[in-house]
Image (cartoon, rainbow, N blue to C red; front, side, top):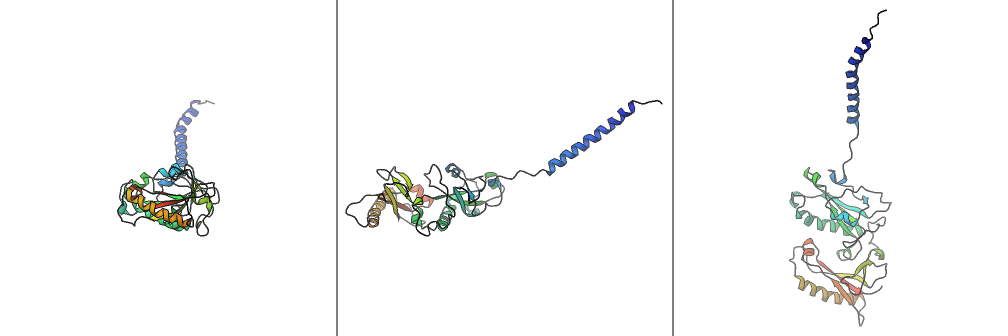
Length: 273
């Protein structure tokens, strides 16, 4: 029988392109069916979940957006979202327009006070504060305008945040917890180190004075300081039950804080209790 050894060779040459096309088709099919990577938190069009908990550090609040993923509120966490919403067009189109912060301050502050069960005065004398976040700049350019307000376990002076209790909502509606009230250590209030009142301390923030209402012009540094001093002298004396001799201190704020919405000064009593 005559053999044709080249027959098999001709058959392989025709089959190779078909096999290559089949392999390519399978590869493309596998790629197209692979799940897309989830978007970062700040890149999402929808607002974050109300009540979500996070592990944030002070450096996180220096950025306008945040990509931390939520953690279980029953686990250790340092932040919790207490308000969400949408920035109106009136605050400006630009990502960094100052109108956003001016609009958000009174809304986050009011929600913060309601969430914890504090009034405006006590809100300034606790070891808790809030920060707000918006979408990433790319998400903003795509039309996202949500915001979230987060309670954080520290103040604007904190170098680290403390773990929040669970639950945090209504924390101050009964007797205010000493571990979250603000005291200080040091010879004077100026330059003192702020600590929880559950720790050894030399000063306690006992009251505040309201220096104006929304829309009022800044009274100036000198008048702010004098009015604060005079009020705190009387207020602290009353808090200490009018002793013959007592020491008091005060913290007053300048025009930048006034423009941000703060209208109060803080009065301090020299006390270790």
